[in-house]
Length: 132
Image (cartoon, rainbow, N blue to C red; front, side, top):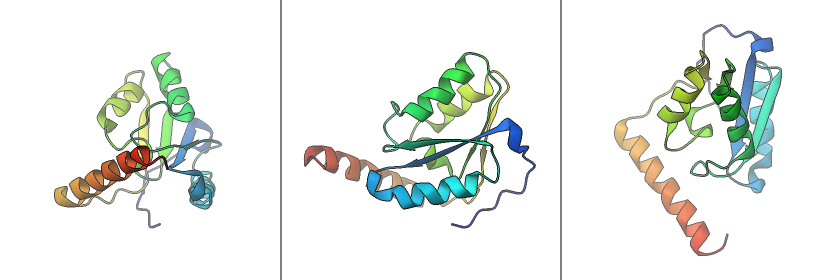
């Protein structure tokens, strides 16, 4: 992974969020955790697809934000939080004065992002349909 974050973070004030889609991706989860640990003393981990908003870790930090806690959430990339609905999650975290710091600031073209989103949706629904 190549990251391009150049801002300032205080490790004590940040909560990192790492997510992978399936248990088979545990090695990637551990790589995310190792990398994010450089930026935060607390790392929240989730295993679940980016379309599932019932993930335990995601709900935990959203609940903290809704209760008024000013969180600084650190993620490797936007899609670790959610495939869709990023703006809503960002709004909830910002409302009490928090922020989400995305380390990988690379942005693909609109066509690339749309293609990735469509492929992800097809994959998720295919897995649901065929029981994987």
